[in-house]
Length: 517
Image (cartoon, rainbow, N blue to C red; front, side, top):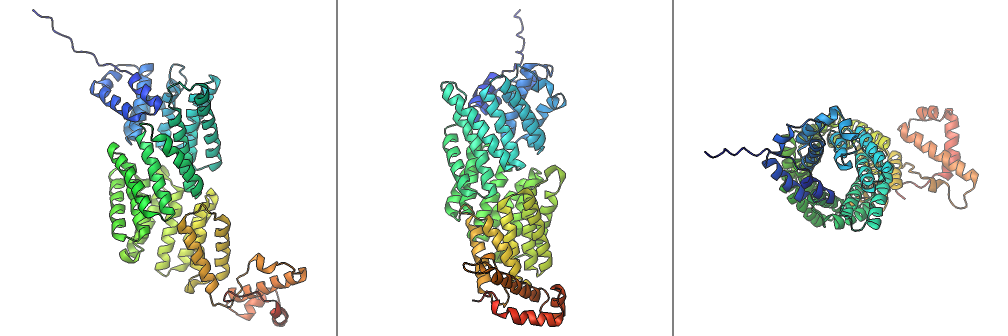
């Protein structure tokens, strides 16, 4: 009688995941993971204690690949035992830095960025002691990426430099070592490029992303290739180059759909919609923005829902899709979502307040528009994000140029702030808006002083003349603030009524040029 063959026990192999990940070849790593899962790797995983090194490393590498595919809950489930007992993962000399860093990725995926930084920093310290350049550079990259979400631009630059130095030293000292140095440098440049884009420095962002694009296209890291293309698409849209923007965004969309990265599918659809909004094609914009919102709702990604709602609010403020109730609802829901603890997004809060403020202008609710813009400005200044500060100042300047709420002194003040923040690297849209505000100010027929320091302190102007010019400006400012009520003007300037009359007569010769000159 033939002896019955025993079924083969499922086994776990770490090397088929570790080796391609070391080179950034995610295509090969994902294929290997599918093969291992089909062969029963998860069944075998359950037979090993949590402290087993093979189980720990396999769980970490598999989690990295699930994170890569956007399956965050599946990745987190694999890492939960090591969240409960972090020393099993972090303090073992047998486990690679790459595997340890997945605990940082766990917190990053939950938007707990400070905890992600603490863990990556701990791994970096271990690697520095061991003189492990790749591990140190890799850890600094994880720290840099977490700071890009805070955001802290000084720290982003610092860890950018630290990571690049380590990877470059490996490339110089160990050129034959198969560690994917070019891919690793490409990742660092991508993070910095995206951070500079969000800060509004388009020239620096473009340079970094161009280099990242060149380096990453040689690898199997197709998700980061798509991320580069999406960032490029956004920059091109900001510069008003809409055809090229759409090409880059659609290229990224194809990659995201290949791996079913639903968050980025929603995000890129939103950016395609924004591009069509810039072109003035409201129907296409609506189609893509609604697609983006449907995907975000289906995957219950509240933060992404908030971002799409902001652009739907702008859509419903256009002539072709005008629906102010819907625009108001979208903006308010976006602001509400941005404040939720688990998804808190200062960017979405600021952008939502700006969208709602412009909606209030359409509704002739000018004081409420002003309040929303001031809320946005306060938060943008608190975070020191120049691009968002510019947007808030511009919105206020536009508001103060409106005939029904005109205050040209305030319009000039906010426009000057925009000019101080503005640079050749700014988006074309912001530059165009700034130019329009200045045209309105220059063309205004109001007989009020719109004064700048250059107008008061000029070449060859003596100190006495400067003082008189300032007094003339103060007089006109009081007149505007009190709508010309002489009693109120006198009180504001701490003068008697006869004193006010004398001051006006004395300063008539020192009036500054008005805005219709």
